[in-house]
Image (cartoon, rainbow, N blue to C red):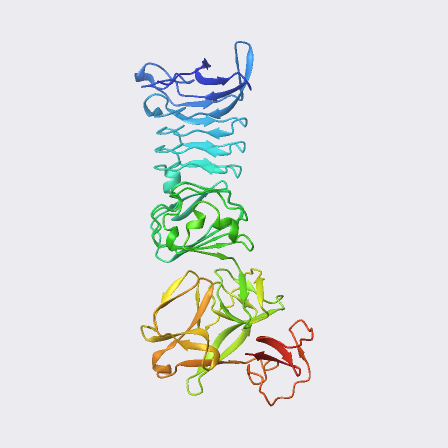
Length: 463
């Protein structure tokens, strides 16, 4: 059933005559071949250290050994009781089931030349306690190290091997957020299989491969942040819950993901860290990343820091660095802005609730009342909901204790950075003398439309 081209020093090879390379291979069913150190008499089997050479000579032609093929040492517990094996630096791949059930193998050093390890390559190696996997390894198949002491002794959590996010080990807690390490190149097939507690995921731009079934059965996954500019090819079963999740893509890449197989099937696609301000000059916003607004001059970010139900006012405080998921109120010029990411521990008790993935909200939520930003009968402010509705990903809404806001239908906005807004944001009255009007770039404007302007030396909103 399994043929081989030649046997050299009791190791079987398949040869490629075109490029003069050799692959270590399986000799045949039901028993493996006579590797060096193996005695045919089953009563005298002994442990042996096996050395695979970097080159072999066959019929006076030299071949370079470049791979350990599928099932090369398959099921060796009864035929080759090797305790160690030396792999030369010429080998670049280890095939599927290559060392399956080599129960006497205790340790192995994989050279830096190896880039791929096949599925179940070391599965059921019950004596394997030590494995050295180089950073050059960029692809590892499913179950590659299952039922080995090396894997069993790993702490719970995501197991990394080489540049691969190999497998999530243990029971995942509910509402888990996973950030794949920078520099990771591949996410193995079945890596997060049935991790129902996974709710959000961040994939760095170093990842070039995501295996089939990698996130299959992740029923709680509601947001995925991916940093790669060009969509990675994925499978229909890579994300089984994609139609219920929001996908955050790099700035300017939304169209590419909307055209890409399976990525386009996410419930909602949002450009990452992108604030969109309409002609009104206002917006709510929420990002799944920590952001720094310090150097974005055209817009300002605010949290809702307090409220007065008697006067129906909501106090907004300006912030520059915010943590992921912070509900924000944005003031600025019309346009789209990419906000740089940051690392910060600045956490605010904002009354605005950020929405990472599209969320359905009701007028009330337990003991709280919900308000949404709208231009209603009292101008731009936060108004109670008349019915259940959906808030898009990347937005925010106001949530206040019902006991404190009973009977209040709307909150108007007051800013507490009085240098810019001495009396809050007001409409321009008909009896106010106006000398000059400028936009926020300092350009004089004739006949301004709705928006934020500098009028008589102060920032004002024209509604």
